[in-house]
Length: 606
Ligand code: G6P
Image (cartoon, rainbow, N blue to C red):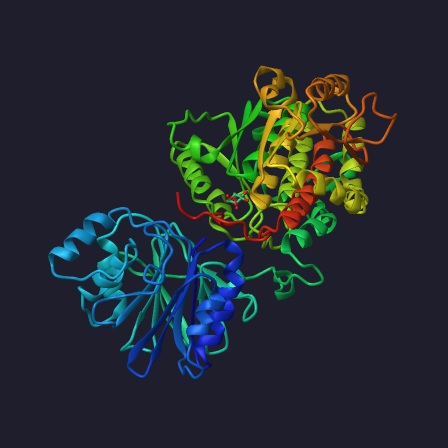
């Protein structure tokens, strides 16, 4: 989604800003732009398309040491040069980049036009530049404050005044803004990924805060009040983790990183002495956890699906009723919040707007909510205040792979913890701990099967549709497999519980409709064999992801075998081949694996 970068210091701003924009490309965007203070005026360059197209527009010599830049993901107005940010006021003195949505922009646009302003774009964001210009003040921050008072909605903004090259203003309400502290230079970004090359020392703005940024430092204020005090945090991620290294795609790199990522999720959390797990950030005493009568998990996209798997793990291991729901649905249905329910918000980025809104709704109604989040210090992590970090390292590809797996592992840790407070025996606890510790090596084994998975992908890539089916926890894996395939390959894929096939989907089975069946060797294995028979009777191709064992009692078109874990943990491993499958189908079909069309990494708007 939209990205902001800003720089003020002693060096050439343009290359720093452009490099920052490249770092944000992974989030998905459709246009880019940059504004620089040169002398006593602004130079603005904007372009539809990729950052490299913006680069082509830039003159070779562009001396300036203060600037802001943006990658846009269209909400109001089509992707185009004129809708790209930064937006400037009529005099060209003020430039604004904005993430988020200004909800009353239609009304503000009408007022501006009635007052004789000629709007240059179709965006909601442009009004900010005009409103700042309409409120002249001694200090730029006061003009910005006056403008922000008139808008409703969400924003992370950076503002430049062509007449004040020594100042940048940033403000936040619902859309992240981070300051990076350098040596007599300051950086601004919506995502620490844009800063990591320059500094590890950052300050996260809170909602309702504004910062006045100079080369020598910064001051923060409440939007409507006095100064606030901020303590810099240290970024945990290194610059190298934002590079593809030996891989051609971040997606493939992140699939390969899973053994190490899972090791980090597990690190320090297995407690063999009591055959349980230790989750430091939970901040709930055993007695409070024992009083939990229900678990409700919320997230979007793959985070929601990992929540479905998490709910299964919690029900199976802790025998506490649990379910997952898309955060976007939950927040709008006036949910009943119960004191004895434990709410869990799942988000890789920690910035997904709908998930954040769900957390805020739960808190407003007095509920307790934990976060399972990858990005340290992100908004959802801070809003929840307790929970678990995945420590999966940065996930740059738009689609989630390693963080799906690590979230499932985090849920397994939580489920064992809750289970061991209840009926899960020491013997079962010990088995599960051992199985958890064994997951990274088992994932490594699955990754060695890439050639077989690739050849299966070649067959699926020739089709236009695919079904993914599974039963019980494997249905969540079918959902994730189908989502991954459609996201990266644009092939239409649907997931069904295998038991539902005969209630509708079977109507579409034919030689052109392949079905991927996720069938661990468990008590439902024979039922899945019957499902395969039903599909084959209608000449549908069948591809099976299962465990090694006796030959299948039915002929199929392809088999991928994964190592066996404990039954509750098996879904985590059964999912890994489906990631590689989606990746290779995408390669075979020539789609943009890392940045699928229309999708964004961090969906910071509704
Ligand atoms: C977007 C991405 C998905 C991701 C979802 C939730 O839709 O395209 O891949 O699963 O957001 O993201 P989060 O950062 O909250 O896990």
